[in-house]
Length: 220
Image (tube, rainbow, N blue to C red; front, top):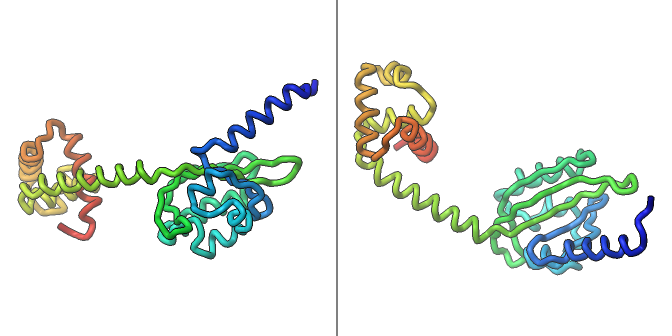
């Protein structure tokens, strides 16, 4: 049973409203060309709709357009896997730094999905500007790092070595063999570190150790 004209009109109005809402940037790519761009995507990138409609998918890969150079490789690999090899329904969700027309850096959450319409391949890109949220997240990470550095400053060199190896997932006996010290010495270090870092559970120390290890890969 085919939908009536009233139902089609209703669906079209809903579809138009979704495309033109102000929060989600949308572009549609067909045969590597942008065939649709909404106002939200234009505002997000600083390019006019007309400019975006002229952008070829290869330009995004080979020129500094839309994607920050430092994130270009990973982002274009993910997007390209859908554009080139994607089957109907294939999708990717990713975060990366974008590059506005002004040269400003932004953070983008992008959902890419491949769909087949009338036996033709289309790629939908749905983008959200998460710059403000990402800046807050990075500031929190920086503050956490500062606090972690202040706490680890209380530790001796031996304790830091044990902490680093705990962060690599080694158990106390493995650490003792690695550092050529007694097992009891390692357990003593662990006990003292929990007191100095104000951690109640050993599991909390392992979490702290993993973050310590990740931020001190070049030594401490």
